[in-house]
Image (cartoon, rainbow, N blue to C red; front, side):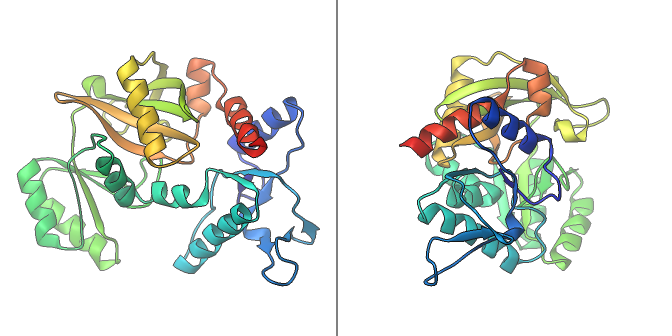
Length: 291
């Protein structure tokens, strides 16, 4: 199980427990401490001073990233492990595409999957014009999760000041038309392989529009209709992910995919539905490794 926290977080511990309960050996690795050899001892990887002998690796996080070189190195490490014949879930290239909200939406739209009207730009005039045209928008980090850093804006003058501040720090502007959610809630579908194994309705807390459980959203068990399940699986597979959390919202024109998370948290979903995604992820990873 790969993360970079000094001690395994809850999701990694659940995966370790699930793997051991299925009769497998399981270890926790911090990605910053994995190193591989090229030419000299090719295909050899070490974790600190020990050999890394895992046949399959489940990626939970690349850790806290401080610069582009660090991100490149950690992605390349996963790619090196994959090219050495090890099974990596989620695979490193799809993981990086899903991490990029801009690119992932481009891929989803190219595959015919409905997504919200979105603008990605470094031009403040284009950004303000989008606010004026759409009326209300959400500004998100291009790379981010759990709703952190997302801002809802309706006033073009206030938007101008927010955009100018973000651009001054070198942040591109990722702007989506705000979609009113019925009951102030959205749907998270947990997909493993070709199956939607569980779903939850995430309701925003009073006075908030953010449905993320990490932001105080309340998870409720949800029985998705076949259309929602099919759309979630299609979105996950369009990004070539082996497991994901797909966020959808119903609109007057049907369901749209808001985001596909390649390292989804699931504690709230498990408590709400009684489904343990860790068991499914481990079983699917083992099946992939045996192929």
